[in-house]
Image (tube, rainbow, N blue to C red; front, side, top):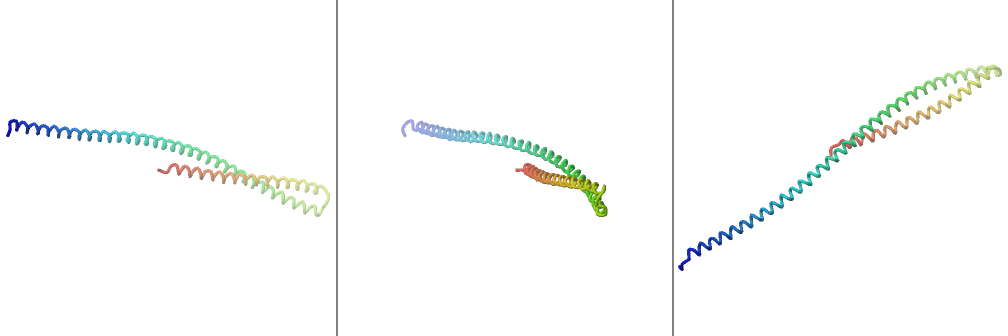
Length: 177
């Protein structure tokens, strides 16, 4: 073997060792860059998730505000309905009293008619005409009040319908997503 044989072998081993080290360094550098890219993507994804959670939080807050407004509106509507109910009850009571008064008046008119048949002329006839006019007037008032009560009932039905709609919206808003 020529001189320098062992040195040449050592030199080749060192070259191979350096070459292997260089390849290992390049491979580690590639792994580092890939890992760094993945970490950047993960950081970006976390940022997007954080923003999404923030936006969802804002939506939930707006939903709570809307639900609170609906509750307030529902309470106000219920109070209005209670007032309408009281008005309807008072009107119904007045109508009952008017109907009773009209019955009394009608009975008086019938008695006077009987009296008039026996005495066609005289003060009883004039009283009969006055009572008859009064009965007609009360009949008209009763008719007007009945119309008023019917209108109030329609308003109450419409109010109850609006209440149900608000309650449904409130219930829907309160449901978890």
